[in-house]
Length: 107
Image 1 (spheres, rainbow, N blue to C red):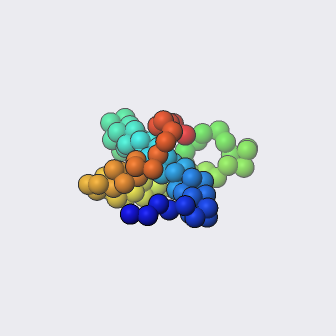
Image 2 (cartoon, rainbow, N blue to C red):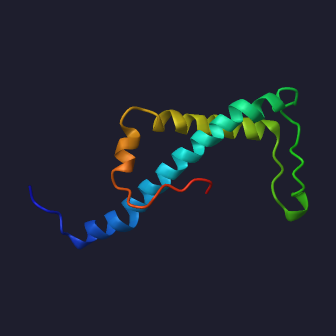
Image 3 (cartoon, rainbow, N blue to C red):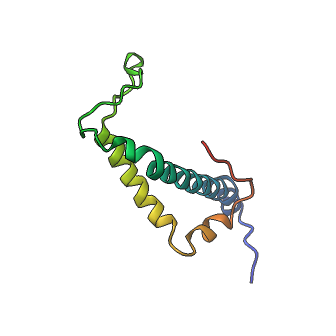
């Protein structure tokens, strides 16, 4: 088997593939944490709210988009779809292989 020494491939692997794999690994850890928190603590609190209810986070004066319950639930559904993909057997083994830095969560 021949070594790959082409500088373009080496640069791409070191500057794009490895960092991207680390971000995907970190994303997976953050998704898992958020999913657990959503299920155990947040979802039960949203049960009585209507889809059009607006999250009052005090950020309207900053020009930050107001979120509704539906916005939150819809994004959690998208995150759930990503989680399903990342949870497929072997996917995270493939993602972890190029990583070199320690796992960082909460980003």
